[in-house]
Every structure is written in C-alpha cells, then in structure tokens.
Image (cartoon, rainbow, N blue to C red):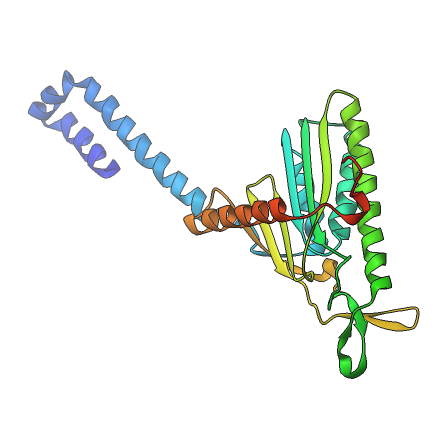
Length: 262
C-alpha cells in the first residue's frame, strides 16, 4: 500500500493528467494516510499481543506472597482458600493486614474466607503412621491442627475488627470447615485468578518420636488460571469460583467458634 502511494505521487509530478486529477482531491490523501495509520496500529497491536509475557501456568506455594500482594492493590480485596491449615497464606495475610493500618493504599474492603478440614472428625490424613504404614486416627494430633487454625482465625479476626473500627476500612476474616481429608489446595484472588494444586498426602514427619502423615502445603505446586484471557481459562476460573462458593455455603462453623458470635 505504501509503495502504491509513493508511485502514484511520483507519477503525478511527471504526468499532468494524473497531477490535475489529484490536485483538487487533497482530502483523498488524508483518508489514505488515516487508512495507513490504522493498518500500522493494528499491526503493532498484534505484535504486542504476540510478545506479551504470559502468566506462569505453574507456581510453588512459597510464591503465594506475590499473588496476595497483587490482590491488595484493588479497592475490594477478596481472597478465598481451601486446603489444610492455610499456614502459608496466613503468614502473608497477617503482614498485609497489619500494614493496612498505616498504609491502606486503594484498599477499602477486604474479605478473607478460609475452608479447612473438620478436625473433630476421624481422619486418615493427618494421622499417625501405624503398622505396615497404615494410617491410624490420632485425636490428639487432630486437636493440634484444630488449635493451629483457631489461633490463625483469632489473630486475623482481631486485626480485622481493629481495622474496621477505624471507620476507614471494612475487613472480615472467617474460617469454616469441610468434611474429609486435605487433598485439594485452592486459592482464589479477587474472583479473577485461581491457583489449584494437590497436596502430597503421603508425606510423613516426626513429632515427639512418633511418625505422622502430615502434608506440607508450602511444597505444593499450583496451576494458575486467570480470567480475561482465553475462553478456556475464563471458563475454568468461573467453574472453580462456583465450586468454592458452593462448598462455603455447605461448610460448618468450626467447633472452636460454635456458640460464639463471629
């Protein structure tokens, strides 16, 4: 197209009929230039899309801090978790919530929902490693995990109440329980990004001379899906969000908070 415009202009200088024909059609040059500009813009846009750095499709749980900090750049922050105790996520949330007191940035509302196992029920994971490596339910160990989750909720809820009392922020952190073992790990950030992975339920650790099946959440690899991308990614994010919302509605209030106002 550019070559054609150049040849036409050059011809008009030497061929009088062509020059006379174009002399009174200055608007035609402007239209052509606009068309050329559009073509160039479209080409640059396509090139930009081609070289855009893609969102990583797989991350480690130790990298959760990056996603949490990014989520807190929004005016309304919503973080949902399903997994074991949520220790890795708790550590990140604790620091960021504390920082809101002095530097709230754009954030005005925070909602944190944590789904953890119902440790009052008998479980195969976590459990004590018995004869022939078979799981043996251990009520005392389950109680330790329950106490850990309770301390996390009490700490986060305490910060949330203090921030809300300022009148500048609306913050709420809540734990609920689901039946079963900690198999899936799901993190949802601002309802636009989902991280999902599977705990290694075969992991063992020793506590006071006794061996237990006790998954390590910080070692769990997580697949990343972000909304606003491909249709497949958008569908995946929507499906996981609905799945979590449904589980949250079915979940029970933790034993440590039954009879106590949230």
